[in-house]
Length: 388
Image 1 (tube, one colour):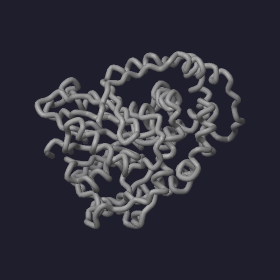
Image 2 (cartoon, rainbow, N blue to C red):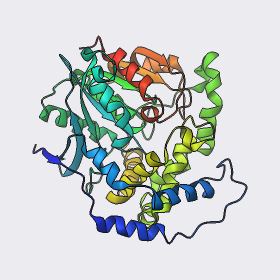
Image 3 (cartoon, rainbow, N blue to C red):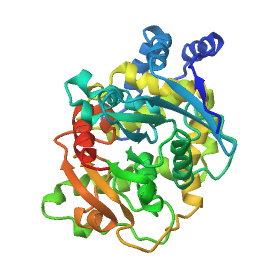
Image 4 (cartoon, one colour):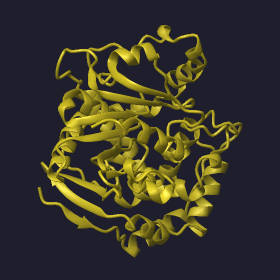
């Protein structure tokens, strides 16, 4: 496997074209939508667009990204971009950090330093990790994707090969959103390679297609009942994007490849609804955070291939590699954020996963690495500290 250094350097013509498009927005009418109940709020998206056009500096973000060591490789015709940050400590554990949708690798920026160099952040150097932070296939700089059928199962297979190429036969894995599925699949199919699985989102691996039933929410304990309204609200009103991206992802891809503001609205609506925002978009994300994410999708033109990740999962039903229980045999740590989009019964989770640690996080939602990075770092360190 040929692994080469990579540097982000976007041509000025791409930025000039973007500026021209941002100057020619035709806004949709919007009313009675202060709570975003109809979808993205035009006033909020207009505010962000103004910032994007007048105050945002991509070159500054580009420089911050390039401060970390980037690499690119190819696995069976699939281009893969990743950071490889060597840990500073006596015996760093290899840890692959997996993002999701509508994330990018840059959503993990706040945890990279503390996890790789804990002493520099007031921690114990014995907790250091060698970090591998990939862009998922078809997301951001892991592009252009021209190979069909790349889902979270195939991604897990590629990650084993990538980690072996980097010299890590056994490694730890952490993830949220799709990253949770990838990490769980690694802990299911490749448990002998996995030191441990740390996850933020609990779901059966066959959720998008397979024979395993969804967890019974009737198993929620009395204490867990407080999470039920949010879970039911997501199932009722929050899954439209998933239905579209699981069935006809190319249709919105055409529209959002043409309009940066349309892309921004599609992505930001999820940040507002899925985070512990309390109705304030900027409580959890700065304007720069939000535009950084949109920029990575825009400059790489990867909304379409990122959306296809849903289609591939839906149309390639998951099949277990074994019939043993728990399904995820590798030791598992759970960081349970109170404003996650869905909550599963702990009793079910402890049957499905080999749960060794369960932490009720005090705050935070779907984007834990951006919302509560310090708490997430502490939980990752504590979980893996005694695992070999």
